[in-house]
Image 1 (cartoon, rainbow, N blue to C red):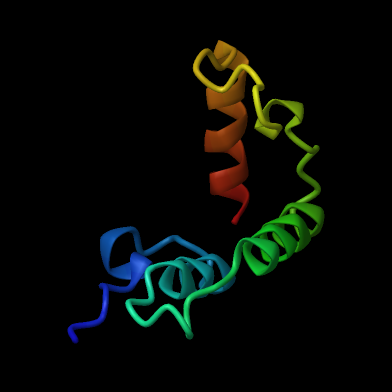
Image 2: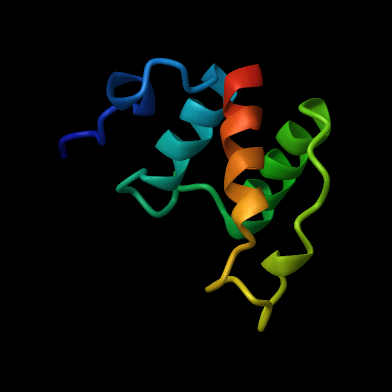
Length: 82
């Protein structure tokens, strides 16, 4: 099997911890692939480290289809701080 490309090869500014998480999510072998529980834990730890407020919209049935324009600016600002 050919491994998925490293996220940093597409966007060099991606933090190492996030690139590793993406790689685990894209793992072709289901036994080695990250579980939803581990993905959530790792994303939560990363958000805490970056002092990012929880996104209430990420609950089932939440308004994910219509983000507020200010949210896009927040994502860009968080990316710049990495």
